[in-house]
Structures are given as C-alpha cells and as structure tokens.
Image 1 (cartoon, helix red, strand yellow):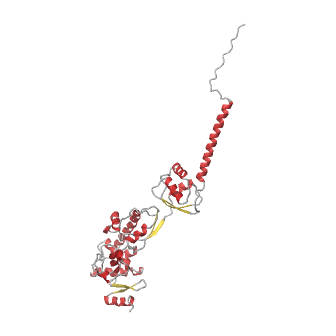
Image 2 (image 1 turned 120 degrees about the vertical axis):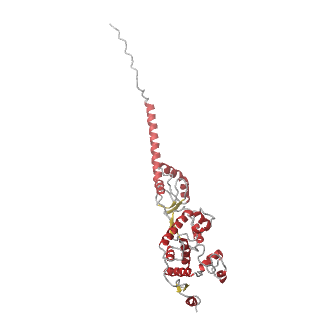
Image 3 (image 1 turned 30 degrees about the vertical axis):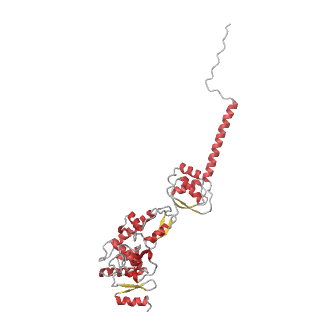
Length: 352
C-alpha cells in the first residue's frame, strides 16, 4: 500500500482580511469623517443662506471704490449690516466674483443672506445719488455744492476753477459757463473730476447744437462768445418768457457798438467782496468785467447758462429794444430809446 503524501497548503494570494475589530474601527472612522463633512457642509450652507443681521430693517449702505471683499465686509459692518468678513470673503472667492464687487450706494433688501449679498453687490444695481445744479450759478458756487456732497470724492481738492479748466482742457481758461445745469444722478464714490467731465461735455454738446442753429447776422464770432452772452442773458432774465427779448437787447447793443451796461458783469468782477449793494463806485471802477467801462463782451462767462438761455441767445427775438428794466414781479419792461427807458425806471424802480 502506497503512502500518500499530504497535499501542500495553498498560499492565500489575496489580501488578508482584517480582524473583525480592526474593520469595525475603520468603519467607525469613515462614518465619523462623513458625519463631520456633512455637518460642515450643512452648517456652511446654513450660514451662507441665513439672513445677515442688521441694525434696521431698511438699510441704505455705501460701498467705496477700490476695495477688496474683506474691506467691503468691514465697511458694511460699520454701517449696520453685520456680515461675517471671513464668510463674505470666502463666498466671493468661491463664486469667482471677488474682483467684481462694485462700489455704489445700495438699499439692501431685508432678509438677505451672505450668498445673496455677494451676488447682489457683484451685479452693481446700486441706488444712485442725485444733485441739482441750477442755471445762473457761478462755477465757484456749483463747486462748493458738489464738494459738499458726502459721497462724491473730491480728487481736485485745492484746485481753483481756472486750474480745473486747465485739467479738463476747457476753452477760455475758466470753468465758468461750462457746467451744464441739470439734475444729475451719480454712483456714490464717483470722483469730482468724472462728474465735471460729464457736465462739461453736456454743455459743450448743447452749445455746439445751439450754435449750428444760430440766426444769421449775429454779432458773435464763435460758440464761446455765444456762451459768454448766454450767461449774461441767464443772469438778467427774471421770467423764462423774457429770455428772447433780453437777448435781443444785448444783440442790438453789440450791433450798434453800444456798451452792454449790465449789472451782473460788474458784480462778477467785484467777486467775493460784493456785499449785495451795487454802488456808483462799482460801476465806475474799471476791470475786465465792467460792461459800463469796457465795450463788447467780458473775457469769460459770468455764470453757467442753461439750454434755454443758449438758444435764446443764438436765436433772439427780432426787436428794436435797447433797454429793459425790472418791473418788480420778475418780468421786465423793454424800451426802444433812452427817454422811454428813463420813464420806465422812474415808474418801476423809483416809484414816481
């Protein structure tokens, strides 16, 4: 009988199975990691979509120019929108709009979340500020008003109207007359130079359009001379309906070689020293703006005329008027000769 040798044991070529205790530990660790990940995701999602706390229900905030996401978040917190700067910055980066957050003035909707806030600011649908610039004001007066706007950045600080005119490349060497009077809307954080470029471009465009429609035979050599005369018409007009007549008086005087003899030019020449009382000494003291002592137009406009004054100047009423006097109700009485004018002065100003 042959002896059978025992069969050799087969080697286990696969990986050895972990002991039951070790396998249980791995499963527990994986479960813990998954639970923590889910907790972080859920918590993060909640934070991103939870309403940002605020100091009041309706909140008007301002985002300054040239700021990164974190600086914007800090600025919002200072204004009462208690956004988490770290969460806000991370959200802006993750959504790829960190460099697209726009400056401006915003009315933040109630209940807005951090996620929605980042999207809201990246779209830049801001609440615009506005300022009204009235016809007949001088450049200095309008500059004071613009520089008083809290959300308009004065990047021309310390510059005079003449220096600003040089910066903007304006004809005549003066800002006077070149600011188009209107109610302007602008994004908070805009600069004064940007604002003035816009306003002066509008005035240049309006002046050119008016000049192209001028009446034949005007005693004006250029659009700039029309701007100068329009500023005088603007200052001398009490009621809108009188503008074409007022313009006709000055046009007739220029054609006849007469002095313009208009008080607003004298007042402008006196400048900041004028106390509201125009005296005989003022009328007799010569300076480039004294139209009682110097013929023709002054060297620059004396105010910023509106569109109506520009068009009245280039298309004046055809008349034989050379004089006018204020009647006291905002309107004027127009005269063809000096005798008639003196009678009107006695009646409307001297009460005789």
